[in-house]
Length: 508
Length: 54
Image (cartoon, rainbow over all chains, first blue to last red; front, side, top):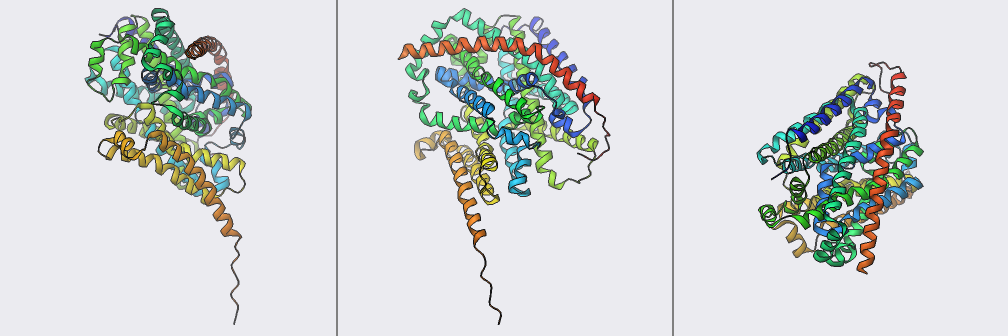
């Protein structure tokens, strides 16, 4: 039974929604050019950038998979957050790849690729970025709806209505104000989200106590609950696969890169990276603590209820626990915080992937003299279509493995090849379009092939592991390794072929 | 070894909670000025909605 009170908590949530919608819609009058719509006229400064990036990279979906990792693996489940924090800080301070990328003045990564690899690679990169990105964000809306239904104690038959309401609210201000609305609402959402996250975490630590939490992790997982290398379900392959994913995400994840592109200059973009880096540990560890608390506190009745659907039992443990633990008043703040987190993530994902569709996939087919107003209209239509996709994909796709495994595998569809292309573009003079094309195809084929096998083979992920030794982590490592190898081998082949001069045919 | 693990995660948890609390307060204050500055810069630029894209 949830402690959500429609009068007290509902009023807090309602107030939050009204203020956010007003702020999002008020700034639409500043959108006059496509550049305003897609990158906020490149006028974003460092504090707004940190708030926006932090809010974007933390949604309900993030909270759910981080809590699931905490519930299943203890503190060791927060390892990807530490890896990403290190990657963000090192890349921010050194400017590795991000400096030449921002200095080039492009709107998207594929636009940079055109200068080195040509028009076709730009278009192909756009296609894999959108494919990986949309598959990834396809589950966001459903997971967000599930969290809200569980934590507020609503009947599950209202899931579709909750999803629709969430989508409509986000779509309205994103379509009207583009990146400008996204940035301003992100700022408000960052504050609400952070206050809610911190308040609930302090409450959990205050009521349960630190000792009860670590004792439970030690009792359930032993050393593997603290150290991923000795956890039998994680291990070296897990850490390596996630190190690759997090470095690639820092370099090429479209929502992260969009903040770099919207920054007023390169050094501001790098400072945003450094300033946001530690947040990625919070992003995993705070919900991870909630997941561990759920493991400690859920009653046998709750566990029996969760066990009725084994696919979602560990995913739903945290919201079920919070629904019973958080008191009236704070529950309203929690739901507002989670709504804030989700809306900022959905809006940013919609606008940044729309940017790639408009700029790189439709770019070659667009007339050169499209006016700014027509350009904005096309972008608004793309955002609306992404919203429709999110709704239907969320309704029909059923998760087979853990949520984070699904997200990191679909992300690898483009992270593997795009990171290789970007590094080669910036630092390897011999890289060319043959290597780029091979890298994109191989990098996308491995994770997509794995997901298709997981869906089509009898027994799914279990059969793939037990019979063929294939896991999601191995698929990710293979995608990165083969993508890099393809870039090197095919670039060398093209350079070799171009050095062979044709022998002149003697004239009779 | 278990004691080291427990201390490591305790220190990390405390550090990120202090850091996140401080960051939220600081960003909430400074971000307002960034928004004001951004909107001021955007509103000062002249644009023709029918002009071709730059």
